[in-house]
Image (tube, rainbow, N blue to C red; front, side):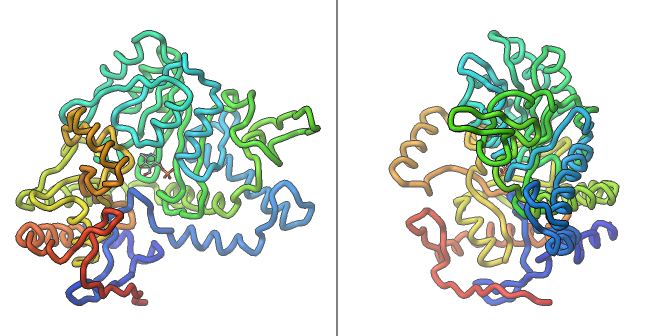
Amino acid sequence: MEMSLSYTAGQHVGDDLWVSVLDGGPRQYVDLDTAATSSASVAVTRAVQEFLPWYASVHRGAGIKSQLSSARYEEAREIMVRFVGGDPATHLALFPRNTTEALNLLAFRLGLTKDDVVVTTAVEHHANLLPWRRHAQLRVVEVDDRGTFDVAAVEAALDQHPRPRVLAVTGGSNVTGWLPDLRAIAAAARQRGVLVVVDGAQLVPHRPVDITALGVDVIAFSGHKMYAPFGAGALIAPRALLAHGEPFLVGGGAVGAVSFDDVIWADGPDRDDAGSPNVVGVVALTASADELRSDGWSSVLAHEEHLLRALDSELASVPGLHRVGPVSGDRLPVAAFNLEGVPHGLLAARLANEYAIGTRSGCFCAHPYMGRLLGLSEAEVDQFHADVRAGFRHRLPGAVRVSANRQTYLTDIPLLGQALREIAASPEGGQRYALDERGDYLPQIRSRVPSTVG
Ligand SMILES: Cc1ncc(COP(=O)(O)O)c(C=O)c1O
């Protein structure tokens, strides 16, 4: 317990912020929205600062700085391939901005047509649904009452006709923290000759990943969710998969030669690297990978297990609180819930403005999954779409999500429990808030001034 408590102290930028709250303050800021994005780690920030004097154009300049920047950038490909258990001889790393861009790039690059089927699941973030739907037909693995699915359900979808080309599945849910059995799911797809693509946005920051052992072909993830918020993510894919075809982004750097009526694309990975790359983001990404690896994962895993158990027990102690999604089994420290009589947006606003606790409310970019978890009928979904079209965004159903990671203090979780119990006991406190025209709840008296305490 001691080790977990002290794990984070001083290791993340901004873990000492204080803000004043509605009825006074200051209070230490509690960031329970780490599934959305994480703070920068101190080690990552230091690596960026050390690199910046040497920052220069990649692959374009002859100077020493340019040579050094180019070398750091190319080395990073190998580091990131190895970080997720790939082999640099057979895999390459690309550095899109984030998971969303990575999956858009991949869905474009596979040359899918509307006759192709991509099997995906009801659990997915929009980033792992919409790019596939743009290019192919989706076949969706449905969830059960717990909001999970088993391998048999994936197998059934893989066995339907026409035969799918791709299985696109999340490594971990951003709504419930649920971790599908990737190894078994990937094995089922590979036995059937289906390409396995994993949305690793939530998995990679929390668990060691070995795509070779898992039998996963492609994985995408975001630096900003793994303590490296400098604008780079990663797509790790077999070299052969991207060896041919037109790149997603076209322009300088992606070509061997260009005339007004001809273009010869560069070989990979340059083919998929048009434009000036984000070298600083990539340096940050590799520093984060090095830090996670050199910590040996065990301290992260132990800390996050403590957080999850504390979260489960605090949330269970709040009268009128209803969890959505599974509350047992292997999960990340993430939980979504509603409190009886308090709209989700108002609950998040009260946590923020009265307790300095940052959470998120809504549908978490996973509308179909939230529809299932909240048990919405088709008619209700249609109604909410009509409401959004008419500008009534605040009518969208949803939940509050809290999420924790390496940067979260174990003492933050009882603070959340205490705040929720107080709000449950004082629903009339919500009368101090008004909905603005964007559908956000704002306190009517506002006196919050962010400040840091060194
Ligand atoms: C599971 C999952 N996939 C994809 C994404 C998209 O990540 P990004 O916004 O970094 O592209 C997120 C972001 O929350 C996520 O949680």
